[in-house]
Length: 73
Picture (cartoon, rainbow, N blue to C red):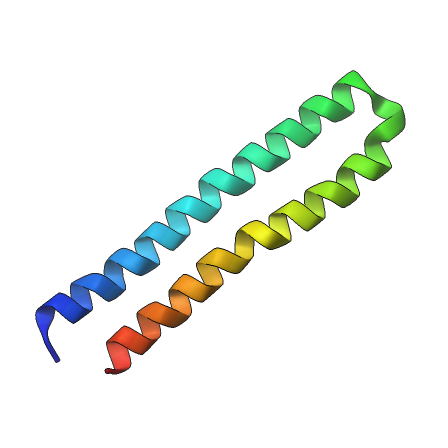
């Protein structure tokens, strides 16, 4: 196994973790900001936040799978 393959797998995993953390932080902070401005929409905002967080988490999961595939190659 080449060392570049291991570096690529590590970069994919690190990028996935960093990207998911930043994305989730932005989505949750904007949801809290919207909830503070309009408390009557808190249920709808919370539902949309969970959908957004789910979509954000899909990309890192795919990236981790690619990292494992690179590692197993």
